[in-house]
Length: 478
Image (cartoon, rainbow, N blue to C red; front, side, top):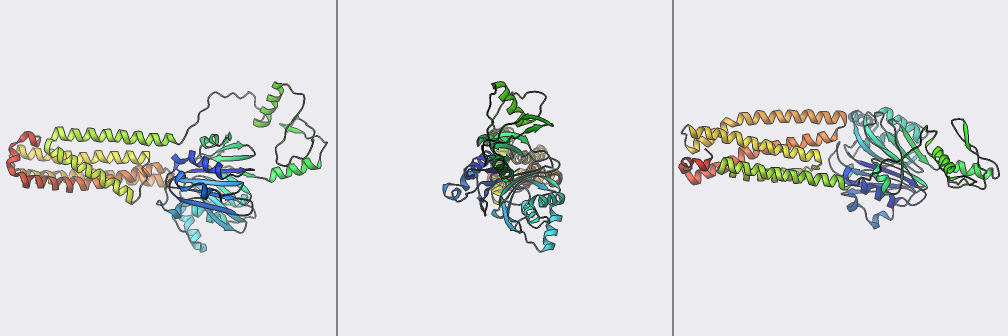
């Protein structure tokens, strides 16, 4: 899940695109980037980190232009590296082109082979880089033709914002798996992954871009309209809808920016009806706003915080259960569980792994697997002690007898994680992949802590205390 946004306006867009990206921060926290066009050249700036960490007044100021696209990244097809940060910007025969992408392609491997066969090198395993390379080298005399060709080549779930020298393109896959909303801004247009980004910068939501649709926003229509009004001052301009003229104002002067005003002796109701027809079309019923809500980026942050809080409470309850029910072995298992948590989080940091909500769920589930392994070991140990075995033999026998059950359980979990990972790759369900990865890594570490760390603690305890502990049944939880 990534956040993408595109803005075209008569005013400078660097601050607008920055504000919109802030509202999409919850969709990706690994990197952020902005590409801007001033009509002559395109400029790109991107770095690893949050939007507020990547951008400041010094690096936003040079991003001058009237068209921009932005991206916040949550990695799915490649690791968290600067070479995979978006947007991607290339020069082509038609001029500069930049692309920001949210989604996953199921035929990425085939597309990369095709590019390699052409002699095109790629710096990352990111689908977006392959898409912009295909777009830059596609057949067609216009960007619209090339984008259509790109859509015919790619299979999967995606939404795109594409920037050229003088136009903004918004594209949604034919299945409509990835969201893309469009809004009207004073003197311009905005497209974004979520409507909350539109509202923040003062844009009015118009529509959710339909599946398979390519939206082109440029100055061509305004230029044609300016020429027509300049050449027909004093004449009438008929506005028709469904073959019916709804207004026919006189052209009083040239309209250079595509925005005009109709004046006349209208009542308030007549003016509202005309605005409604011009804005929304021939609707059989009037539109009425029932409810308006703004969703900010703190929603994702609050969800993560609550999940961490719930996981902490659950971990404390598990630690208390092990301590109360198994006493001394439970205390040793608690220490091993804390080591497990530290090792797992360190592993997540080294890889690195982004802790999304599904990822946190996978980690917490692996904690339960770690507890389950310790319970199997201690129950086997208690059985040996009840049969009169020495403490040392009971410990070794308990670990040996529990090992097969622990291994079978963990292997079954890994197989399930592999199926979930394959499902995520095939259908673009990146959140499922995050859950599967974190669960698989957690189970691997939990098996290590149960069979190595806990065993080491138990052997050390036996060596220090000797068989005197065997007679203290209460302390051993027997």
